[in-house]
Image (cartoon, rainbow, N blue to C red):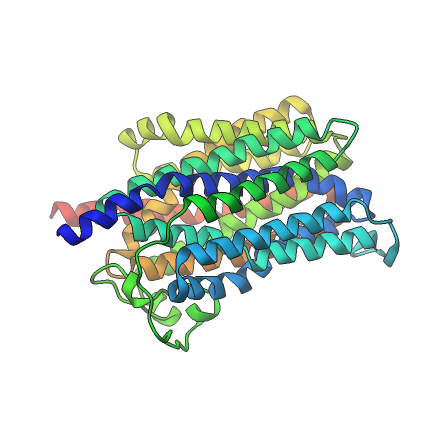
Length: 443
């Protein structure tokens, strides 16, 4: 016991730098989310190109995260976090350099299906920057593993909650900062420079303030012939929860109710990411918003979300079952997509309230129900496959969002609403499952 107390105290000093790194990561993403659409349209792209560019990061992250996760097991968390931060820093340098490139057309397209767009030299550089950031962007998964190294099972939920708070704060301040900086005469130059400086700060924090986590490396990494290796969700044995077991995708689909929850997981992320592509384009093209207006809007949503997931959800959870909250939250969330279609400013901000309320109620309950169905034995395995489902849905949704907005404009929001209402319809099954489980427990 005495052997563990010393390291535990020492590693406790790393929690604040770890939270700070998480905050800096989402702050940078919040900044780019606000002004990226303006750069795409300025450099000749359309909704489809924006969707492709937005999906570049998660697509390359899906490739890079397994490698970085494996390396963090073999060589230590800090080294790989530092490598990830340096990759992000280099990507921002390329991104900044793209702003000074001449707008030279490389590919011109005029299609009824794909729309009219031109791939210019700056756009090509932006794609390269986002790909580099994505392939080295395993910092979130490595940071989660680092946190698991530092904390006991009893403290882990609390510390992951604090990390989520740090992440949400980044989404609140990032768009607001990008919106304010983007209104100056320097345009997107200041937000990109700010993101680069923030990345520099993150690199210094990892290098100087973050100690290496507990040594738990192995000489050889076991080769696994399963889809979990491909999707980057394989964990090293010494980090498995005691009593936990690793299972294949085929075995996961044999677990009761888990395939159903993974389907809901996929559909929710699919609907969200259609919106995340279509709305910024809609704000620029149809609403004629500035970076400041778009940044304020996203900040309002994030701030409201933090409020809903705090006191509001706590009170509702005491009165209503999780399955009912999923149905109710999904219904409210679907309404927000419908309210976006007319393009009225008042309705758009009412939609922001509905987004925060619906998603803030529904999503934590989805996570909780999935965790209960997974049980203690297969918790890590099921959560890993859920992460893979969300990554694949994000890539498909971001691409589909750009293509759908190119073809249907604001009507694409109704398609996102239809996907969410399909989730609501399917979630009525959860109400029946929850009732039957309570009856079984009462017997």
